[in-house]
Length: 486
Image (cartoon, rainbow, N blue to C red; front, side, top):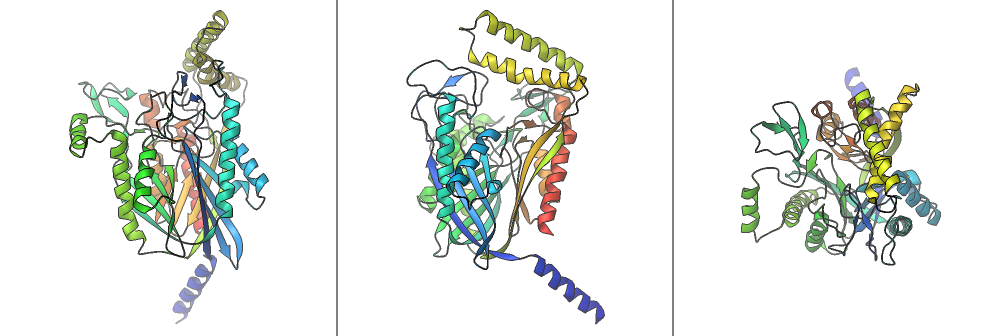
């Protein structure tokens, strides 16, 4: 009898610590497409946009937890069609949004990228050609930060009582793009027809997670879609394009209504690509038999079907009173030590590019300045800092949001699939949606085996955090999830 009493007491205490909250949800979406030609982001060469293939947008879902008619916590998810959201850009958005409505707490705003390579550059870059039809970096940043801030305020101020549910499907969207060879080296987009080819480095993450929000009349307000695949089918074009997410949104809006706001968040996919890496002819045949679908439409078809399948289950399990918590921390991560050989290589390349700028100040392509200052120059700076005795860490912003049984955990990196799986497997949540390229300057986060294999995305220039630092991010994220689950 005493044992039963103790168990009941423990259950009562546990239940009282998991305070259930009602939700209010508001949504907004905004067309960010520049009216002039802008520098596109995502390649090493300067590309000025030559027209618009599809609109560039931001999509917002604002969630507030309510107890006794009072807001107790919140999360505002903002999905932006871009490569990543620079920290300075995100801070400008927060400042503008909170200046317009001081009931919005800046740390509750989470901005993340769809990782398209055909969207405007969101930082001040190399000098651009002069022309009345060319928009400079500052104009783009000023306009887009204002538009996104206004959409955040609109979503926040339109909140209504809402029900929630979620889904999880498994569907292949992205594929590993790092080919490994028997001689030990690894190459992004390496040739699998080579007799030296061994395997692709990491597995594909097939999870497609969904968060659904309805108003009390049963209208679907927003769906948050978490899928591990960058939006880069047409990454080399010189046009503005939201890539496969534009087609996907159109399909989901056709299915669920034009007012539905689709918030796309990118799962761990630093080593993944939307492009088939082998059996390409067979997959092209299947697309042709389905009606000559292009690759973007095929990806949209798969996501649309997976979301529809999840919806059929989620609509049977709507919830109105659920645990909700949003935590934010900046984690200091160990950085990679720049070796002497890496320094010498970077210094040589950096000096060569800088000399080109001196010799041809009016003719040198703008991307040369980026290579000299950003790509190789930062490695040189880090090595020289090391030699002076400074031990630096990488400050990584992490958001963890609990919504009922679900954890949403963000980071700012191009997160390799392995790290996402470590978080998902050990998380106490029933399902954990890991979101990369959120709130900060993006950098690759390769695994130890990737660093040993080398190749773009694992070299010192593209990956400043060590594999030990990456595991610190995994452990820190899990600690935060466990804290909101206590």
